[in-house]
Image (cartoon, rainbow, N blue to C red; front, top):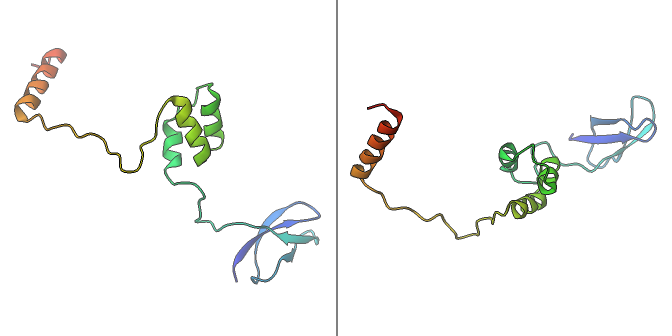
Length: 122
């Protein structure tokens, strides 16, 4: 039998219970009648799994309304508003970052030597 979410009509308690698929009513611990809630499984996520990584790097101290709305409700719609508010255009399908040509080992050595000289490591 599957596990369903129920809400008691008497005490407003929500609980999980195993029940047949065709049962829409259950009995609460208080003795009241509970109706089955429409819910999705534990593994289902309506939004993309990358949204938490975006909220991790968003400026949490920003007073901007688009940032506050996105942090309060990280959905795809609020993500689009967040990007527009930040002046960022999302990458379109088919777009790729321009690849820079490889400068070669001589340029890499020169950059490293200049870095060491600036830091006083030479």
